[in-house]
Length: 397
Image (tube, rainbow, N blue to C red):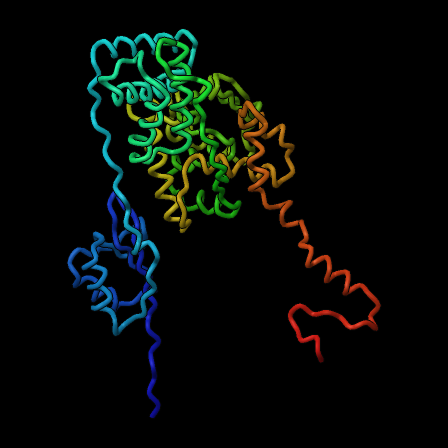
């Protein structure tokens, strides 16, 4: 009688973040035996969200599960299990003198007089206040470029601020020097670091459809569909009022968008039935997406349910509301839409900003032939009597 050897079940072990905590995620084909053994390990439970068995992540739990199931399965260990997140140093509270507080308030008034947006004023105020807090008790009049360098070395680098943040700080400081020219900081010597050229992450068209299909909540699906189909920024979506949705003309009026510009955006024909169903069901009063007491829906709520839908769709990378905007622009470009129209639809001031999508769109790239393909095609088209060169075969026969 032959021994029948059972094939061990393959179990995938991953470390993921769930409800702001690191958890050990266990994925495997359905097995009563494995489920029974997992239930005997304290702390393990089934997660509908992650569609797998999870528990709080510890090294002991990782070793325990491998020990308990070593005779039943083979293990595939995800690289995430070996990555330890570094904690960023915490920012200390400011202790600014009253004299310097007065100076900072005057700087804020100066920015308001220049008609900068509230978000820009807040950003510049924060960086200048942090800088003044750092250089104290040195008088503002005696500040030099070396003080700026030391601030960057001792504050920005340890706190892991991005290059974008450093550029904003330099911009804020340049304005502060104009506002308060008594200090000895030389504006011309203040150099902004070059921007990082990071290509935007985009979804495939198939992934967009899957994302919508797994989102069962009507309101959430309508929000995701509108973010993608109109290429909206998250701030534009949550501030969108019903009066600015023109169903007859298939248009959205985006008021006071980034750079204080208004623009029109096309409503997708396929989105209209979903829009009407959503409005009929939820009956929003003022905003397209409303939270409690008919107020604006929060951006954090959108990010939260989008993250949940991403997990259900089995998309194993970080997807944000802005990813949907990037995907919208990239898919328009792949479908042949002129770059100038895409710039207008996205509300970009500079064409250079829109040009980034030419590096992401894959349609034209896939049409480009490698020189190797061209050479082999040329050889194949020669006289049939000549020996053909086969890349995958033996040419010495």
